[in-house]
Image (cartoon, rainbow, N blue to C red; front, side, top):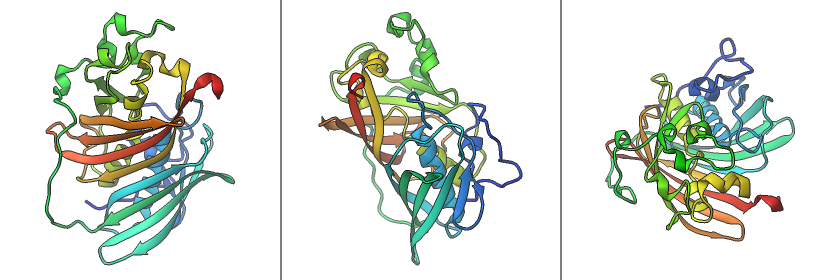
Length: 304
């Protein structure tokens, strides 16, 4: 279950991404024991590199540097500034602790002198211990009982563009929102949302890659539980500017990130232009794999 090195200089020095292969996107080129380079970028809807890529590549760089036999337990992220599309990203790893059972490190992601994110990652030697887990926040249908984004009826399409919801999915994944009529075309009664996600392309059997891929996914749509309580998802991009501020992820089990994952999300509060969302991540058998917390900027787009 240990992390493994994520790439090499000979095969991964590619400037463009095909939009599907998450392993290629998250794989980093290891320069030395402390420095790795990510050469491929994926953009977000604000014209910057998607934050999930920065998180996933930071974890990939940490996994490539940690002592063999240790698995990631948690990461904490401070977003500093947006990353520029098409520019290589340097990940520098600083180890803070290397104990008998636990390791911790800090990862800086930079483009030149620009500090993009600061990430703290914890690792442990796998161990046995007491176990319990809460169920999802609501009763959840299986993914084959939920419409895909492309299957959502026309009345829930974006009125301002005439586009279908499938066009707003990342090309690398399939997403299914539970009870889409409660979130996409209308404001949610409660700041809660659940959705299934699955990568379209299988990942290699590299445990470190699955941890990094889940880190990538953990930054996608999680803040929608907060947003859709105030504005319907179909109108959110037009009226609201959203950016991740702080992000935390705890791993409870080894994930298989290319199978259906359930994100069960709720937002306990939004104040002063910031919203907080918590999520539990389950596999299709409703085994708890991870927990996520994210604080985001949530502001009127006209004021930005």
